Image (tube, rainbow, N blue to C red):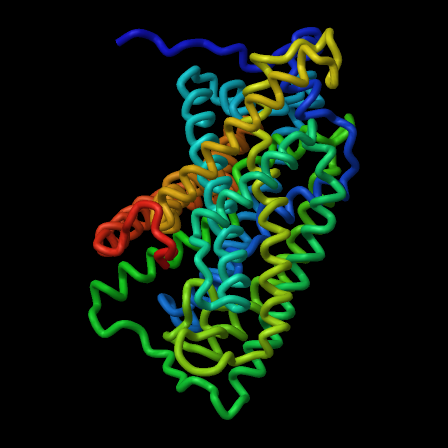
Length: 453
């Protein structure tokens, strides 16, 4: 077998000076709170409205347990990765890309391409999903105003894509800091709106009958549980922490931990409140988007329409920010090859390729969102095989390889145990998600005007 290709695992400062992906897109000018804004946008998104549905597959006790364990493990994993990045920076090898960090520490050319493949799959998947969900938000608002209107889902997706094309021209990750601050407040806004609506729905005279029992079949219960675990992993995952840390002005040492604390404070406020209120109100009838449970197809809305409409608007606006954040790795790869640092960020030489390439990327994401309105099922598989390796396995491996704790130490065995457990959970989650994909296949229709839950 031919030896793996050998990328340069840690470019020198002189090499980075001519690397447009590093100089332009991953511009290092941010403060720790900017990293907190970016992290919160990458993790705390409308997927939290899926958490009552997650509890539907796990029940109260196991739901709380899995949500808490996932939160603790991901915080620990991101903390370890931040420590590894800080260690490399002190050693004169500051890494601004996940793939370079993995190739440097693990010493494998194949690891470089494995990480870039998984990152690309995740980031493109999230970009497609964000456009699809934003289009669905527009469709929900349109349907409430004009129930028999002629516009279809793919037309709303086209509208969202046009907006994303315009926003995608913001040249650097750092230039998103104000948008991501707004995104943080939007996530708090729609979470508290939904929590209040669920409490009102649960106490109203039209409250749905609540049943918290799990599926009767043992095998179905197991598959639902692993699917729920995969969803939680995807919700907590981000896969771009090194790129977010790259936006910090050097020295970055210690700054990322403060950003993590900001992010997980928001997580604590939003994840648990959305999970508890939604599952309490609807039990095992919880929809994969709890707003849909509050706006049933039959019968009256279970909360004031204007309140839910405001929540949908908040979700829509935040989806633009999420799509932008997860596009940055793709833009960095594009500009590394297409831009010329010597010509300046806004020179004609660099502006035209940026405009063309980013527009084409967004058109691709928009087209896939319109063609595959059942992308949520596909994303479940991507989450299981993508987020778990990048966020639950590699950080522990990178820490053990960098700091080399003794094999008799507690931290070594904790890290090893997390890697083994979550590798198994990822495989089972991928299998469960693929099973759901197959079971839902009869509902799939290209360019459909209905999103498959």
